[in-house]
Image 1 (cartoon, rainbow, N blue to C red):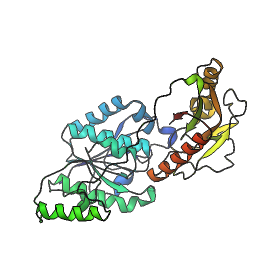
Image 2 (image 1 turned 90 degrees about the vertical axis):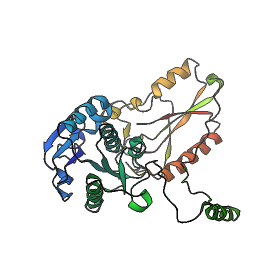
Image 3 (image 1 turned 180 degrees about the horizontal axis):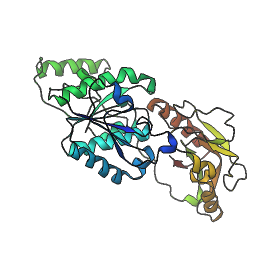
Image 4 (image 1 turned 90 degrees about the horizontal axis):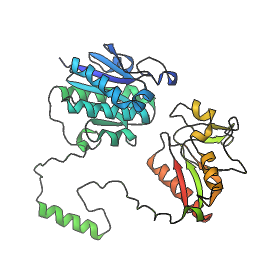
Length: 338
């Protein structure tokens, strides 16, 4: 009989929404939430609030790993976390910690979730879409893969099994001679096609040259944190953004509460709404401008939301913002994330 332990965040464990995101780790006997749809018995469900895990990672992992050591499962299932950044990172970190004590893991999340990179190949990660409505179709795939791993079955390469590449290469006998494949690759390259059997990684962007003298340049505020004028009249999405905006700073020495709000859907915005300068430090930059540390602050700030935004859209928006900054003579930007 396969022994499974399931990890969920506070929401899917039934402990509450964002107001319970600071909940410390806990354990539930048996299945909870989506674990009831896995199709086999779940020995225990572990949970932790998204904020707590990401703000107290070491403490959270210690408690969760202690739970795993008390009842070592054949396989650990984490999520699915879909496009949730905090949840995805928590799933990945726990999967890595479980691997260190010999427990294999299966996760499920969007391919562009930060949890994929954070897992560092420690888990089998099945790709999902961004929406939780896919839960019913994702869970059977997770269950099948987890059961095979628990039973010790050999798991094939990602292109055959459907999980995301783990950065692990294994030698195997190819049906064609290397000389044949080399000639084929050469012919493809001659007509402009990709000629490699090794998947290429993400594009590497060279860093800009260092700023020689901050006191002589114009600097801009740029953020994916979703800070907009109150009312959000331009309807900047709280997640999966495809557009960005530039808003005038005017003569403001700081962002006053009440005139601005944060529409980002991936974190608790209470503290940033109380004081928007916690997200975009306009007050600090104005002080540096006054003291001559920086030359000038650009009269507009630039904003979008990074929550669940695809790599393609993020790249496009970044290039568009960079072009506008360059057009305005801005030589540096303070890029503030969440």
